[in-house]
Image (cartoon, rainbow, N blue to C red):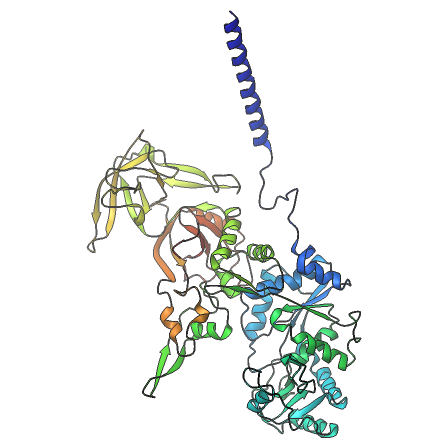
Length: 625
């Protein structure tokens, strides 16, 4: 009797616990789902409130006025994403302002397309400049200060060749003896007259320079940025996009940058560590011209330097990317002394080719601006070089997309699959969620009939150990379909390729795996591009770029194009419901996860009426790559 009571008590306790567990599960299910935009209770430390950026602000606690000062002589690359995020983000975090200042002091290399592209990229990343300015806004004032520099005996006109100037500065490696230019001590009035002669067109490019009289011969001064830097030079191509033919001489970066910072009352001048030595000449020039209180940070810009962002496995050099975009002709000297010319054709379609790491290319590839900014923020900001592998960037992009884009079924290399015993009753319209996990809202209608496309990689003519997809003898499920199937026969076309697979329903059988498909009656025909590393090596910057050896390391399969790919009709629904805008300045691209394949976006430049898709990243890291 007692044993019976004890058994009943244990059963009651067990039932109570089961009920409590079910109640908790139900309560949890009613809680709002966390999304990418749901704030967490313990937000991670903001990059601007800690570390290097916090120290920079605490060093000079004043209303923040920062600037992003690109040279409009090329397209920005991924390293510039960090510079944009640092300068604009720093100002935004401290309720300050940030200028976009084009450093347009070299008309020989500047083109209008670069100006517009830089502005678009900044907007794409989500920032709005407080004001757009140009170094050329200040050409008159800069010229006046250059004359003032001469009057204060801190500048002189030099007629040495570039080779002679290089020797004065210690030779090619800057380690040889340094000595003064013979024009260094010429009378002030003579330098003023010569400088005006430069302005008036007396000299050609390379025949005269205005140099700053710094500390070239000081044996204790080991900073090359203090070895009488040029302040003005004559340019051969001197027509300027904004000032026209007014100027024959143009200021250098070393003269212009800090003075424009002072004109715009920049509080924090943040740049990468290759400008660390420039800080001394920057402060020297401001103090010489009374633009800064000596030994004080109370007035005038404060320059500080952070580590730049590099990515391995690719190249960021504008000159080298230009070789890929435009092609080049190189010369190689043979052992017998003869010169061999080699013509290398273009290797990519343009500066926005998705295989490159320019920001216009990353945007076209479909990488979301928010994901790129989050990646930069997660890396943090220090004074050390940040060198990352491309796989790390792709992993960050993948995490962002996994939480934000819908799923669709797409077949890259389609082969028709016919269900022989399918009936009209089997034809149906399935309601499938955009995300089986429920993180992404929405659903679409998917048609299912007796004929579908599957990917050729999901079929083998003979069953083999470890291969659980479609093959004679295997039972395979079709994702979201009401039954599994088994192969009955298959046929090939004249080239020997499997062109049709015939199957029968395997009702009641449990498949070991499921494959994706697209119904033939509603399939949308598209072009899909998959991207892989442009180079075979992980260190393309170490290749022979002078004589063209780099061309031999190009990966012939860096872009794989599927011209006959198909996708479910749900893509059209996404396009129609999405505020799709193909503007190159827009981040409003249609993105999705192709089930079991990769993440894709619609290319903003379609080929006629055909939809073209670009692979953003794979579903998981490719270990082989």
